[in-house]
Length: 56
Image (cartoon, rainbow, N blue to C red):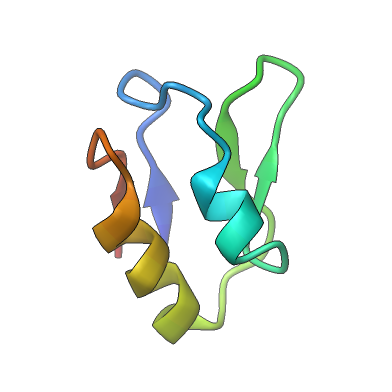
């Protein structure tokens, strides 16, 4: 299951840029999971997250 820790997320948008089918930026300017799936892309986004806010 893909999760974004809202307390860690700084809203850089890298994950939603890499995987727009998985992540979306919410009204607070932070990432949230739009849809579970495409774990390969989500894994790349998690590895690229500068604050390690994404877990799989």
